[in-house]
Length: 169
Image (tube, rainbow, N blue to C red; front, top):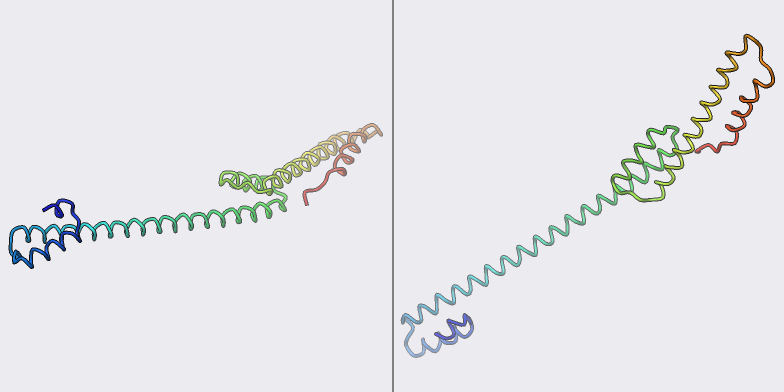
């Protein structure tokens, strides 16, 4: 009875062998001991199944984490490539859109600074073009009355400023 209370399978089996030798193989205590041994074995089997299921779940979770990490790395590589490409374009809105998406996705490479610089350079070019266009329009409007040398100073200044710009690529 003590070995059954302790739920020690080896001891119960050993005690059952002693009982069998004594001719108590069909006694109530033997039947109870056999049930306890079966219960212990079922419990061990259940525990082993649960352990294996837990390990399988952990392996699957690790696999999913690895897949997610690989996807993220691929996405970061794609963002890097995209930023490098759009920085060669003369379109602020395209560069800005790629920059925003990259930042939202958490990309932090040096291409972010490169994209910001490309935008600033393109904005400077746009500003220079606007100044040149405005000065040409002013001269065009004044041309019928005649132009003086002073009228050309603003245009010359705008041209000099534009010449000093470093183009993005």
